[in-house]
Image (cartoon, rainbow, N blue to C red; front, side, top):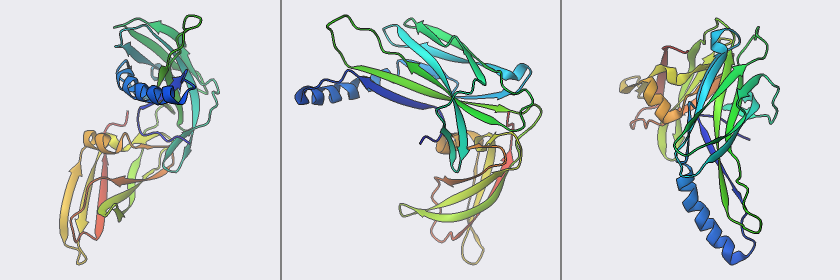
Length: 266
């Protein structure tokens, strides 16, 4: 089961040797190659927001080949379902998104643009979410030749919102939790709108108080810092999500308050 908090990279290893001794060498080689392959393909952006109709119903994903060899790639679409904590892949493509070109060969040092177009219901009532997976394709080897091929995939989150609808995020709960011996703030967000939103497109104020109610700690976290620490913080249409903030509270802070201020959500 997969949950999304940002761009996701995954590897597939093909052609692993059968002999045990060679397998050990292959694993070591794979670890080394994975580090270099990770930089061989740059995908931007990792989050795409579309509207159900109009000029905002299409966007562009760019893939840059920074490797020394030609890079064969294909783009695949998968519908997502919302669950507690994020979205998960369904393995189904309903045809709501068109990607062009769906497959190509990118030469070293070159960048390819892929058009992503929403062609589903223009009167969409609530936001829908999809993965567009940019997948590296295996290379055909000469007959009789074998080698380990490490294939790298990037998942881009594409979200489509109803036209003219904006998110409405707010804090509906906050509590102190213990994680690994540290006191942290767990904040519950609610999106009352039919359009998705992001916690990282706002700022969060946290206040810790002791047992007597005295303030012992305060911190305001801007959007860019939230994105670095918790990811984009996607909150779906009419969804509630609990997020643990990775900021250690001081000793004596037994109660925490949180306030969210929205900025631009589009």
